[in-house]
Amino acid sequence: MPSPKMLKLPEVLAELGMSRAAFYRMRARGQAPRIYKLPNGELRIRRADLDAWWDQQEEQPAA
Image (cartoon, helix red, strand yellow):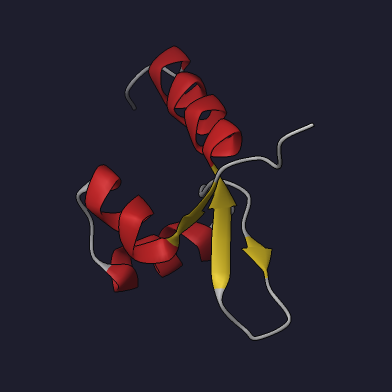
């Protein structure tokens, strides 16, 4: 069974089109996709989690 595709934070930021600071603010509000912290301190986000997060954003009406 292949391991899930894990994206580095800069890859996610490029896809979202946002700065690291904006992403961390969104994360602090609990509105970011799930993040995995590696033993070396680097952050990763599963491709499937990011895709699910995108789908969830489309379903929510604009405030």
